[in-house]
Image (cartoon, rainbow, N blue to C red; front, side, top):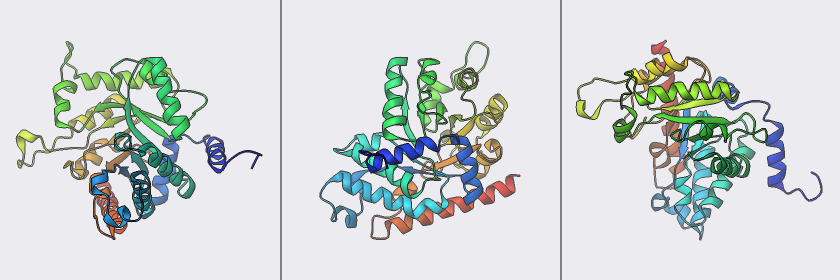
Length: 317
């Protein structure tokens, strides 16, 4: 270690040296190794922190770091990549310290598992550049998402030679029901607004030379609220988006688990081979138990989700 370089600086240096492999290739290698599409969301709500952890540490940030790293370690064998949601850390004092400790822990003890930060940043270029530095450099994550509403600079300004091979993923068709009020608006030519966004992000990713690692947030197949109980599962958005972007962009898929998404229809409509999709679950895994067995309970949920996805892949083929 060079003189004056602390352990975190050494870790950053080693990470930079490993970045010849881009994010999507890391997904491919990880998927081959563990046969999983499971993205474990790390979204702590401190009111739900297990008592055994709460009693062991005096500050919320240390409690959070312990809680989440225990879940990381227990679910790692079934995990394609981890996805902390930044708002869950910004909402309590010291949360950013907890987030950094968790990211560092993953890089140190599970270096083959990418860390994707769910932050949904979207702003003018100079501000977006600050977000890139904050998250891709300082936090040291392997990828992040953005809101495309302010145009191509939202994507372009997250790209730098200082942080090569990172995943840059745009919101496109999200899983919250009220998103339909905006994303399903039809343009004059009959396309939905989200279809237009998919086309734009594909074009931007090619223009800026990051298509290999670019992606879209695409909701899991779901039962429309107005048709609850009908058995009518909606997955057209996934198959339609594949028509638009082919397999050039990978999909980060929310909406499975407590949000009620349907795994079989999701993989049938959206999966296009290794590295083409990750399926996120957070609440169901993070809050599997608030007892002393919280880590083991989380692992069981992740393992079951891995098994269910793999069964769906076999039957969807």
